[in-house]
Image 1 (spheres, helix red, strand yellow):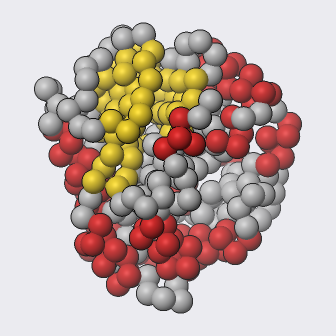
Image 2: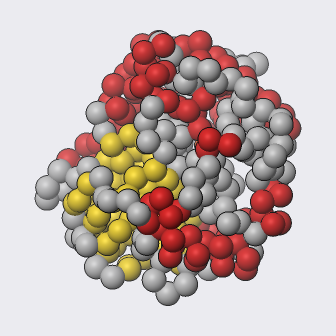
Image 3: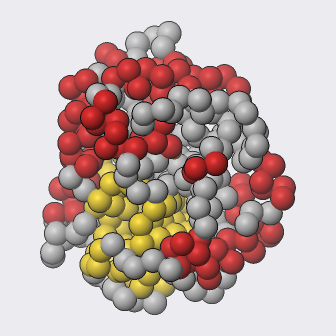
Length: 320
Ligand SMILES: [Fe+2]
C-alpha cells in the first residue's frame, strides 16, 4: 500500500467531492498478478487523457495504423472531458469505444447512480479548491450531455488491463497500482523513498515490468528498482510541455518507433517511449471555446494549458 504520508495527500477518507477517493475505485495489484493478458502484441499504444480531443484521438489511431502491423490502442481513461456537446461527445465515444477502452474517473462518474463524488479526481492537497470546484462543474455538465446508454457502457468498462507485449507483462491503469484515481505514481509521490518502496512492492504483486498510467495530467518516466518502469503519458489530448501544442502517448514495443520519440527507456526486449501526438490545435481550440466560453469553468482552468502548455519540461518528465 501507499506510505502513510502519501495516503494523506491523496485525501483518502475525504468527503469533499473532487477530493474523495471512492471506495469502489480501489483494487489490489495482486488482482493484476493473478490475471491473464487481455491482448498480446509486439506493439501497443497506451494513452490516457484524451479529454474529448477528437482530433488527437483520430491522430493516435492513425499512428497505430502506421506500425508494421496495426497496433492495438489502449485508452486508459478520461477520453471524455471537454466534449460537452452531444455530437462532439458521440464522435469521441464511438471512436474510443472501438479501441481497448478502460474507464477513468471521468467515465466512471458519468455512470448511473454516480454524482456524489464530483469529478472523482481524488485531487491531493497541492491542487487548489477552486480547481477542484471547476472540475466538479465540468463533470456535472458532461453528465447532462451523455445519453443514458452511452453512460452505462462507459461505467461498465474495466478499470485496468494486463497486456502481453513482446513477452513482457504490462499493466495499463488510469491512476496507480491501487486506485483508479490514485496519485501514487505522480511526480511528487515517486520522489518519496517510501512511495518508491510501495511502488516496487506493487510491481511484484502485479507481476509486471511496466505500469502505464495517466490521470495526473503530467507525463513521467521513472525506473522503480532495476527491472520496472512507470510511464505516465500525461494527456494525449492537451499539451504537456511549455510552449508545445501536441499530446503525448505511450508506445511500448519490441520495434523502433516510426514516429518521433520524445524520450524513452529500455526494459528487456521492450522500448517504452513517449511519442508526440500532433493534432489540429486550431480545430480543437475552436471547439473548446464554442463549448466553454469565457466565464465557464473549463475556460478558467484549461485555456492557458491548451494554448501554451503547462510550465513543465521534458527534462522534468525524465528526471531521476
Ligand atoms: Fe483522471
